[in-house]
Image (cartoon, rainbow, N blue to C red; front, top):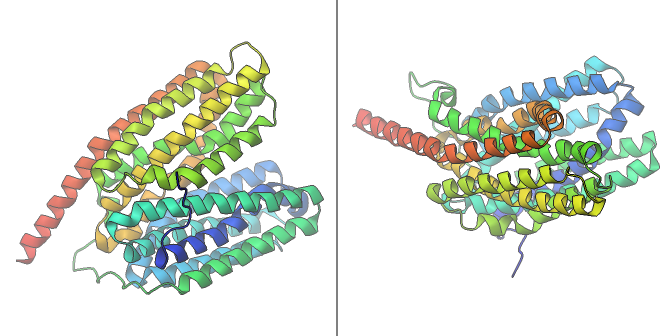
Length: 412
């Protein structure tokens, strides 16, 4: 079996280089940011949590108009500007020493990150034919995980030093990584802006597209898997199982390297809307099985038995994650009008900050308070959302076809 992480030469490989450059910086930032903000900036954990919650809420709202800006002004230049804005916001953390400036910088950071994600999707759509987009996105996800793993290792060195200078070096590296990202993006071919809106056409049409909104909502539910491994499972291991604490790190490494090595292979069968719906539908039962195995790890027994169950649950979880990701990428692109990819991807991408904002509270309450029944209920939610995605996507596709037909008739 050949494992290929790099995408084909040309625009896809340069997009991957941009992804890798900023993900290395982000990996180090994610590992060190909490300790930097508490020990160097002097914020309390409550202030950090509140600031980041508000910031990602603002960012999720800003993603749609920034995506629309990428459509109107061209996604290459918009992406580069948003990468520069991200670099500036990270650099500003170096001089911040109180809550309100931190909140402002965090809002700029989250807004630029959400807008950058939408603009880069529009850029990818302009450079890669529809049949190849999911495959390229799978390569980008592999590069993202590779960069995060490398960055986390660098961040670990800063944690070992445990000094203000080491933490500041990580933030400088993250800011520089986004400067490199902007430079790489500017070397890509220009993508023509979308045609100007016609009279009477809404500025943000995606906000009136109810079928696409339902698809986005279901995707947000499926993305509750994101805080599952980063927060809920670690707390579950420590509070409800006999497994050793170091297994938390092992499961994270398992997930990271599995996505890095196998996401491209898992995405290969997804080439259209039908195969995308099948991939998402298939992810639901796998996630249910993963939740059931995680639940069993709390039963009385030896620590190694709990550890085996946790590793098996994490393996099932990452398989479900890769199937769901591949299907959702294709659905998000296929249901968006060709001239509004940026704003539609900005809206579709709100599922990520929503899952990051609401997921920790929902999952910790459900799993740590309800225990095994909570895990089974969560698995049922994943199954229901994955099976509902098929009819929702068909509804959205039918609505898109009807809208295109109406526009053709109206212009005749």
